[in-house]
Length: 316
Figure 1 (tube, rainbow, N blue to C red):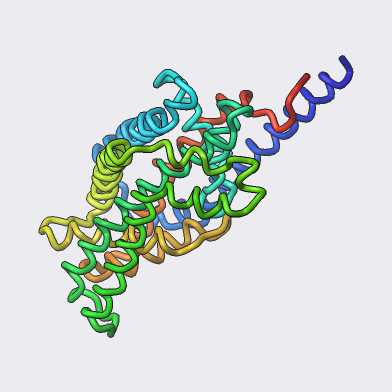
Figure 2 (figure 1 turned 45 degrees about the vertical axis):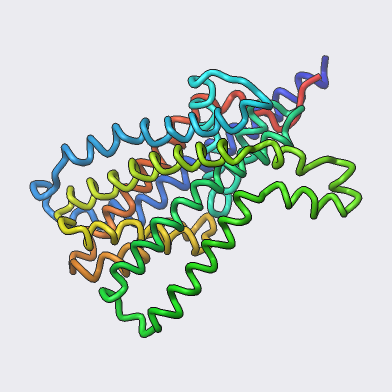
């Protein structure tokens, strides 16, 4: 009985610490990157309706992610869409303090079912990898198409070959992911633990369906980016201008970030990419940070509501 009470207090303390860190991190980043620059532009120049629409779309964005995750783990655990959505949002809260927010993946599995933690984590990883595939595919197409906008001083042919090989490698890994199981099973530990057993459960059709979910979600948060840029007076009208968005996502995704640098990296990449069509540096930074707050910061705050489900120590 005393042990159970101790576990409850420890779990409560952990949840409080996570909540404080998450809120503190969001506030500090917004204070540094957003609030200090907001007074540079007049409120009359901001198209608030575009920001409101972008905020509403966060539920579509993460709703699609919840549907994808629910589909990916259906052979291990069948859950309702509502539960999948709640755990997805809470996973953002737990993952926000980890590099590149990789903590979201094990957090969802831990919140759902400790007993199937390994299988759930691996299936969640595959679902997340499908998003990486879409980001790379569309980003590479966009970069090759509008390469002449940038003055990188690199040979376009070599860049195309490098990016194509990289994507083909990812494609092989994605659709032949079961081969990883055979490779790692040569190691006794992995064979005994059956860590990679979950990877061989996906059929090609299921992997394509995961890509479909990821594509829909990609279109949603790309439109959100267009909206917040438009809200701050950066109009992307032509196809070449719009393709800057997937290029920005591509560069942002391949640069590793840590807790204190995520927004800074995103803002720097946005300045580099959108700087070729606009000299409104402050507005570009504000749009980039606002998009982060809408799709990461705000869901992380909402996820605090369900943080009581997180238990670092299992009670007896």
